[in-house]
Length: 318
Image 1 (tube, rainbow, N blue to C red):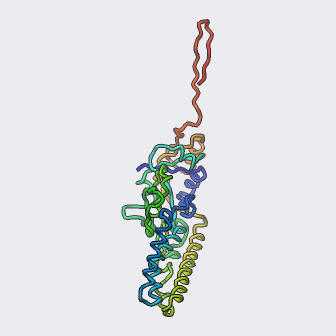
Image 2 (tube, rainbow, N blue to C red):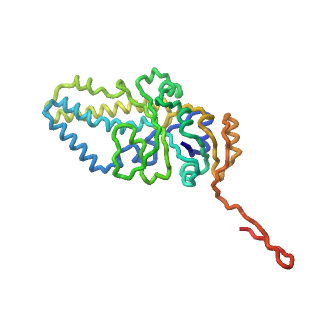
Image 3 (spheres, rainbow, N blue to C red):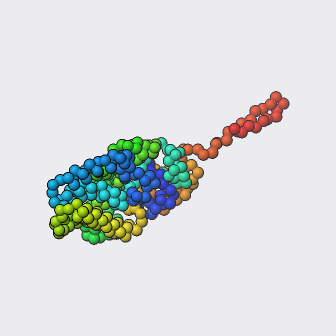
């Protein structure tokens, strides 16, 4: 599969100078429906969660058991809402044909780097067995892997699915991160989605907390317990957000890549300077060919002349 990545000259220079591909954090995207269940009408979600809650609270069990049932049912939704802060994405355009709309939206004065799916995966260290470089990822960020022991780094690469509002999206798993509104379908997007998942030692320990909480048998006490655990969960994830923010120091993460393996060709925007990009490539040792965009922004004047019978000539320019 042929791929293209539209980017500014500044981001291109950053890629060459650092040898690292920048993946912005998911909550930085302009489309605020991304990564949410906003495609599903709220009334359906409310109905589903209300029925689930009524079913749980009608069970003839102690408050602690009911609280556990409630948290088991609802915590994944909270977890994946907060997981946007632990999710990072690199977006690529599928195909080889330049798009004026993509130039205008993502790189009006920038460049395109051309690659393919196989080269993209191999340059990131993704093989048929999946992503096997958690330790390497932390080394890329000059962080001792032992200091972040328990965080699991996973990567999915897939085409984006464009859905109309009202289309059901799975609440759990990476499915939600490969969806966009149908109006964006011309982008023909393929994504790298990197997630830092919290291990058992990082996530809030519900069983331990329940085992050390007095038994509750009235509805008010159970509600207090649920609210307390909900707040404890949010505080737990907020703590990990601060840890990752300190490591990355920017709203995104970086992955080391083999530039010469990744970049097959560079296309300069219709009004850009090819020699500038060639100089950058030479400076940072990139062998990829550089060429001008095939899109024309100015007409190419055609001139010709017609000779009159008396020998005079009329010049035309169209």
